[in-house]
Length: 107
Image (cartoon, rainbow, N blue to C red):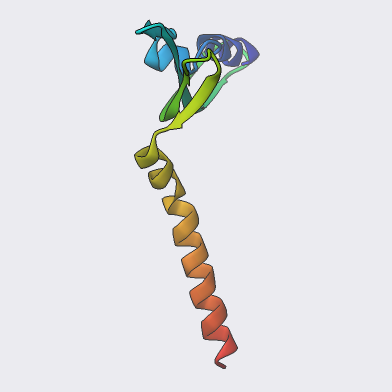
């Protein structure tokens, strides 16, 4: 079974921002490097005879870019929409918790 898991882990070894968005580029003498939140997982199983299988998947959310300014200093430029969307579960959880706390305090 460990052979299956090792093979799957090896296929995900290079998964990252450069895999999804490509290498950093230069436009008008400014270097641009993509920044993303990358998460992946995998699993596998098998028998004692090394028969088995597995799979995995991943997600990459574009968070923003690093861009060099006129002085050559890298400056982070956020992807506002992606940041707001990634905060949605947190806002929902806080709202739900607050409503339950208020509900219990009224009793």
